[in-house]
Image (cartoon, rainbow, N blue to C red; front, side, top):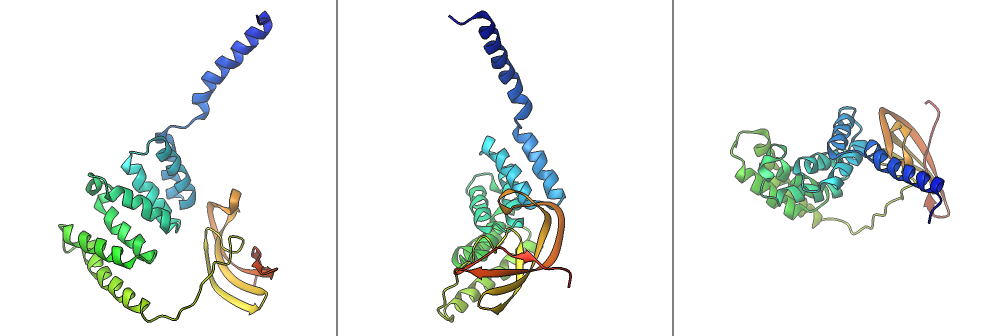
Length: 231
């Protein structure tokens, strides 16, 4: 038998935890609102995190699924975006989601990911099923079919080379471009990155600036790039 003061204390903490949980937990509607606010600020990676939390609470909500796929696409996560666009297109109500553009965007992601055959077929299906043949997306889909056919021909005339990723320390969630290999162990490149960084090198905020970075190569591995002073 518990002593009376200990019993009262235990009961207090139990009731405290019950009433405190709703205060700190977010509903899918609240996560969705946070995601939409992040989109307005141009923080697509942050938006994808919020929409993912909303989707975790209700995986059947296709409107949130579309928003999540859109945020992934705008954050350049094409593999994941393709997966969730595909999830929408396989549902019976896909034509009602995202103004019916899920199939077009799925084909776009497949093209970006090098799956030209499936991209071509989905562009063809979209163009055929879209009622407004004079719309931008119908005309774009028709042109993309030709682009995928051309890409497939180009693949047949390529040099067999192996491309390896330089690693997460050098590559960020943002855009790296105009790389210049100074010597075997010195790399210079430009990158548009936010001034604020979240955990795991994820970007945060909307203050993005283009800077020149330098990265050394040590023990066969490229290290993280550091921004140079003003040029």
